[in-house]
Length: 296
Length: 136
Image (cartoon, rainbow over all chains, first blue to last red; front, side):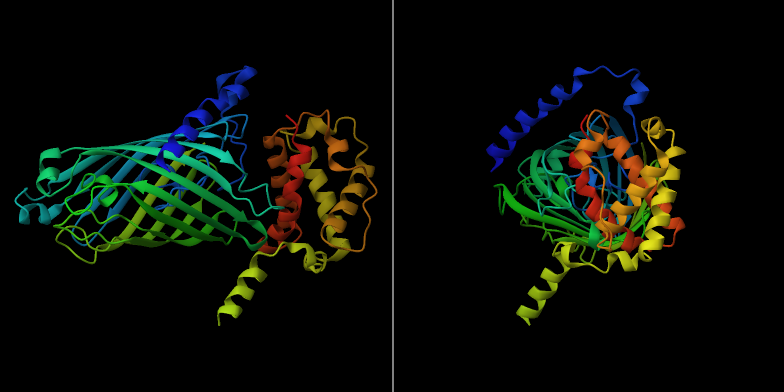
């Protein structure tokens, strides 16, 4: 599965060159903001276009297949015993390819002190992502059941490798591979995403990759359902399964319920109630998720 | 129970072909004509696409658009114009143009009192026309 995704990804990455045979009259014309409101989705936790927990097949931003879109985001998660920040930017090329960078900061607050790392000890992670649409259009193909399908990779690099090794993680970097299928059931005002991810990441990679208990890739599932109340407002729920690789810390699946408000094609806000379950020595980590996105 | 859930899922996702109440839910033939007229007026005021209508007989265009909207919504009308591919070939329309049309139609439906969920049932029937209309 991983080899298949990697090969397909490489082949599709060069496909957009075929669209670039006509030079644009000016660079700014490329930012056409031509997609319909909300059809670029929002920014997922790891910086790719999606919901919050789930990465979707939609290309981020509002560029059509003749243009380019951009999206930047800042996301804050307040848990009982931790804080998490995620900031990043992504570019959507010709409604086909998405490239993203994201930085995640995980603040251990008082737990850091309990673990002997010091209060407020932080883990940082960089996520470099690329996604390519393979087939289908989530919006236009209302006469078929075929969803929009994309494949993608996320290379994740976490700091504090020595500490991560001490808790049982096998690596401080790793690569996730995913296949996302997203469909707008327009007549029902419903957006549905199903994504499968091959990953070794512990807590999205913040706690490293692989572990003493399990060190192979495992296939994980993530999905979103959103109901559109208006062109500007959607409410939905998400679920994401995660590996459980570390002997010292049980890792639970995550879920959220969210509301997203699209002020216009430049600004959107997502608020959610997020439950990450157990994180290291603290159970019941659930709390507020707030994300601000800006782009075109 | 399982049968019931399955039936509910099927009912939710079955294509809207049998849904012939849509034209009534949109306010009947009169309101569909009003929506077509307002949509056409929005096109002509939309800098992104108005040049496309430079050589168009607007009265005839409005008549055909009203016929098409009514017919697509399952109403008692017959569309007498050419098919979407023939009508738009050579215009080199982009997805941005197509989406501008969608936004102008949404604006008209807002004005003419069509609820959002009903608008989406209608747009779901029009969306696949993108395949014939966008040729660039």
